[in-house]
Image 1 (tube, one colour):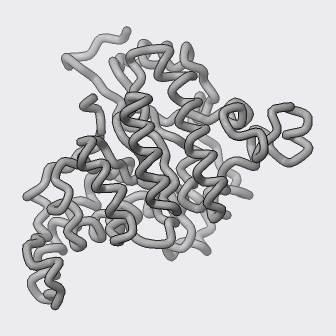
Image 2: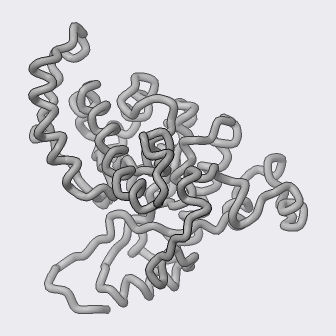
Image 3: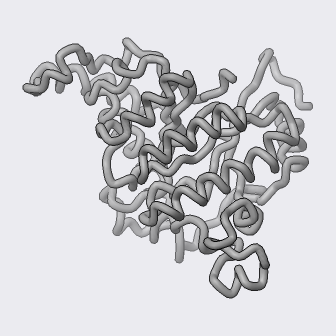
Length: 292
């Protein structure tokens, strides 16, 4: 392992590249055939079928990534990477499955999130104690999301779940999602907001993916953070460990600057917010959910 001057180094947002065929093996056969030939005939393969595309901006672009990026590495390959760069533990995040919030079919959303979580557990988490899982949940059906969150944390030992952004249909602080936060509060687990696409944010006509990528992540996090703070979610569910991932720190400073003044000058006539304060300093926010 590479030498570092730190006692413990954690990758709090370790992206893996999903094996779609393998995930399909964990899904009900009436939704996806177990026979690979039949599955491919129905359109399920390593690049299509299980999760929606991120957006039009990620396609048809002359983009080069750094060498070694987006490699579909198995558990052994991931351990080799951790050793090479001196990381002790990684919280494993979805990549293509970050678009799970865009799924409009409830039955599919329930099945594919369970399939992904069980695949992640068997393929990575069970292979090495250095891997910590973060699940995906079917937010389109909040009660099913509650059940899947419980399965991910209680049965699989995950740190919590990802809050897909920004295409859920409602913002993260919306009341229909409160049962999910109530369960996360009971479990004392992580809920991590993470961008999964950049469409609908004002960037749809950008010519270059880099510009949408640069702004899409922090803008998505600011939207999520504002809705959760101003809707009183942090106060109502204090045991949830919320995280806002992969957006740097600048967005948070902007929120610190803007939230309090806007709250003072645009107070809501809403009894639910009577005890809500928008000052993010009152709450511990983190960029990692690793406490399990």
